[in-house]
Length: 214
Image (cartoon, rainbow, N blue to C red; front, side, top):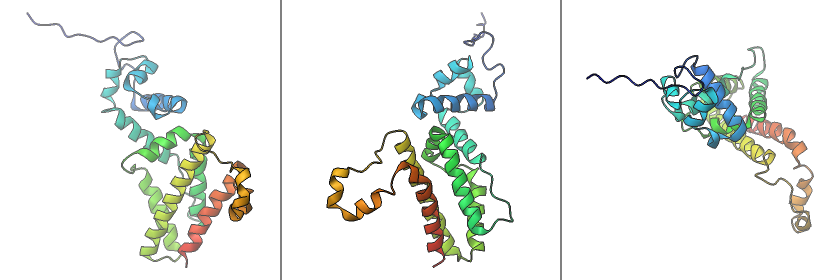
């Protein structure tokens, strides 16, 4: 006797995967991450949100990690380098500001992109633009690499810190009752509020670029 092939019915009725696409799955995954963070994303929950069995998703993505990689690619794909007419400083500053704006709009997706073990392919064109801009600024090949890594390290660290502050996971206010013991900290405290993060970020980028020319 030949066994009949079992047909799995989706949670919404019909056959699993009907109407599914990589884009639809990715959008649903990003919605889950927006709401609950990376820990809220599982294949079972994703399938439920799409109205299909989780197994149907594997026709489009190898596993959960592949979905997270696609999410990181999506974030970098939203970046648009400034036009060729922009000066080299403006190009680098513009990309840094655009990346911060993207992180502020999608903090959980940004967290996913920063946690992936390998650099998304989408980041390579942006990397090329930045290195090209530093070359236009007259920096030597070795200096370009130093400045590039300093920029990436600063931007990544600053934005992860800012995400923690805005999510309430990190305190920004300094203990005023202790400031008298630390005069230099006290003098800087007035410029370390949430409203100053724009200035601090832009200033940090400028400091790195200026240092690269020395």
